[in-house]
Image (cartoon, rainbow, N blue to C red):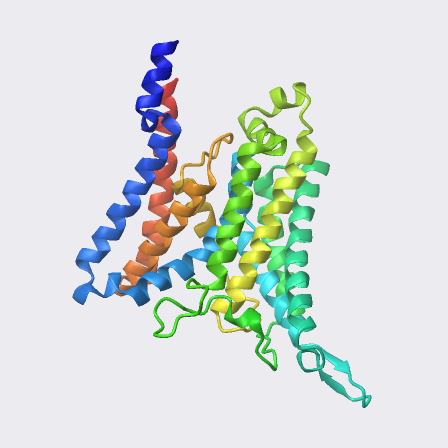
Length: 351
């Protein structure tokens, strides 16, 4: 026993979990080096492009925090892109409200209450996505339907709701607020603000810390892994499987709502009902590339961040090399299949 302990102390990287994570990170480095070498004139590794990669990956990574919990719990959420769009539209709708002013005439909410309006918009957008995520969980638990079927249906329902709220048109708030500047570049500017990174990146970092602590050090986190590993065994051990599932889908909705705030800023501060189409593919890909297993019981927040960066680098690099969009989509789809195949092979090797 002591020999094993000493060996583990000497070589912690031999732990399968850390070895798997290191492999994902090396793959990220290889993908980055590939585009850094092939994109002409060193444009790929300029400070401006690196910051764009960081900003673009924020939306996928933030939504991926909740998706990581869902997939660890042996579920799936195909409505992620629609949840992001719902948050975007609700934020824009609140900022576009007209309220009666002191003169009895309608005035923009952002003019009457410039400090309160963006706060209400943030709360409304995040709450809308969170409640939609809770509805997904209630249908999965209450109706005992498979997550794939429920979220496939809700993907269309939530997207339709977003279009209905916006009357199938883009919403243009009359005034800019600080929400529109969450993803503004900072590193590539000559005069950098004191916070150095875009505010959206700091929000992501905060989410990473909270989600990591929850999964690693709380009873709820252990329950999520237990449900994903073996639902029946978890139930026999006293785990409230239904409540755990309700939490992970609600958490997925919440993090998609926060990602919607970033998306709202990234697309220029407008409420676009058709935004984030196919984002569920990118978010799920980020989680799977990061080492999570579709069979449940396995995954990490850090791995999801690595996966989100990998997806964004592939997308950005493909654009700069002139790849058609259909080629980019085929490459990302192929990588998902390869990641799942690798996961299956790795599990067979350990049996």
